[in-house]
Image 1 (cartoon, helix red, strand yellow):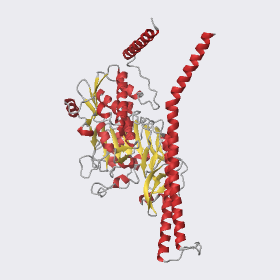
Image 2 (cartoon, one colour; image 1 turned 90 degrees about the vertical axis):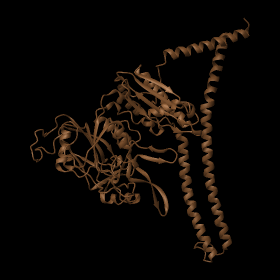
Image 3 (cartoon, helix red, strand yellow; image 1 turned 180 degrees about the horizontal axis):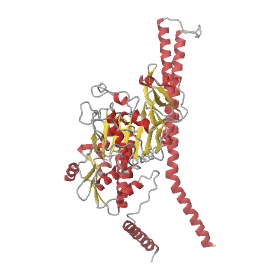
Image 4 (cartoon, rainbow, N blue to C red; image 1 turned 45 degrees about the horizontal axis):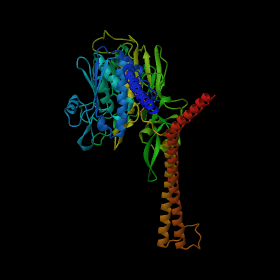
Amino acid sequence: MTRRWHLASLAVALFIGLAGVNLLAATLLSTVRIDITEGGLYRLSDGSRSVIRTIDEPVRWTFYYSRRTAADYPAIRAYGARVRGLLRSYASQADGGIILTEIDPPPFSAIEDDALAAGLTPAPAGEGSRIFFGLVAENAVDDRQIVTYFAPEREALLEYDLTRSLAELSRDERGTLGILTSLPIRPGQIGTRPSHIVDEISSAYEVTWIEHGFGEIPDVDALLVMHPPRLADDQIYQIDQFVLSGGRLILALDPLALAAFRPGADGLPPPGARRASSMDRLLNVWGVDISGEDIAMDRALGLPVQITENGRNQVRNYPLWFGVGGDGLSSEDLATADLQRGVNFGSPGHIRLSPVNGLGVRILAQTSADGALVETDIAAGNPSPAALLSDYSPAPAPLILGVRLNGLFPSAFPDGIATGEPRRDHLSASRVSGDVVVFADVDWLDDPYFLRGDDTFGLSIVADNPALLLNLVDLALGDPALLQLRSLPSSARPMSRVNSLRAEAEAEYSDEQAMLEIRTAEIQAELDGVLSGRPLPSGTHTAESPEIRIGQLRADLAAARDRLRSIERSFREAIDGLEARLRFWTMWIPPIAILLIGLVVGLWRRRRTLS
């Protein structure tokens, strides 16, 4: 065999061998997955695997994804790859329990009509086409869960949405949550305003709205009380007995509820809005006290707000509105352990704790060590950041914002309550272990504290406020498997070095720009004075003529502008240099290293052969 035929045969053999290895791997290793991403983007959590193990009958997942149309949109294409990979991870873990089908609907086809009939909501694309990007999940009895569209802003909730759909299809009944509130968020009522949190809860659970004048608590599995109306003793007694009988309670009270006064569609606060809410008789027996005299703030965690100072718009951190991150959230409680984006609070109260026999206490959220107190009346006056910081005095210890109580609760009505007829089912202490969550703030449940609007992408969630409440409700309704699925890391990998350089340059540029604006105003004022015949400012050399002075001022202005251009050039050079280094290390070093290794191995083998 000639050398040429030998090389050709070798190439054909290598091609056939490679194809055979690929076919063999596709057959034997189709269920094997290795996730080496930093945040484990395709690795299912223990909670998801626990729900998958409860699947008794196969669940059909039909994934509608306009893959060819989405190829023209890089952001959707990247997120689509993540969703497809995660869906395949579920199907692989389920071992036949999930039957996954992917459909790429051709434009203007009957398949698109089927997707619309199933309840999916497409996104518009160019030339009248649409991008379908949703999931239809069905069980053996045709119960259905639908993800209408995998919105990129819900990426952190992706695994939660998928696992929740499985859990809903696998269990016979959905838990029932009773909601009692004075906030105008009950759907169907006059003056109701949209509430993202209410929408989230209603989509996951059966919700029973409790009237303000209730005589008995309806048959619910858990109770959510958010800034309640004034409650009579017999109504507080009903809540007391609900907890003592094993019912689970989530309380959000507030000495300064800004959400209660947020204007509605008519631009006015809701009629009858209450500034404060409390349930002292109940909480004090459980060792919890929420003071109505002062409000918590934190200058270290303050959220940025835009204010006007000296006629100029400025962005300042506002101590009364702050975000509590990982250090201030419990790493032990299932509701807070996996929250990564923090929880935003608005002018919250604070909790003082006293020990009570039989009750365990866990702090869910607290300020940093730099937390401080301000009088409620002062906080209600919308003070400026400067006013709050002028007499800032940190508290001796971090201020507690939320707690979980569990164990055997004593009754706030040990002898019952006087009614027309004696109650035979009165409880003076817990019958079984109970669970109560208390927050000294209700504003964290209001949309503006966790939703941000953008002209391009619309509303997006910027904090874990909804995730925290959903975690609490899940735990209260006895479905803890979903608790660790809410705040998964984003698949987006920002260029942190580039962003850091850009932030430094922009900060320097903004300072220089502010100085330039001030200097320009001074030049203009002096120029107007010279033109009007007023004497030159003090400190100006008397021998200078107006023309000379104007020339000097113009030279100063040109020098300031040159400085700004210099900053911009330096910034651009730094970014270009970093990009060049990244390209060198990622695109050139690997092949060069492989080439050098090949040369070294070749030389070593040649020397070995010659020797």
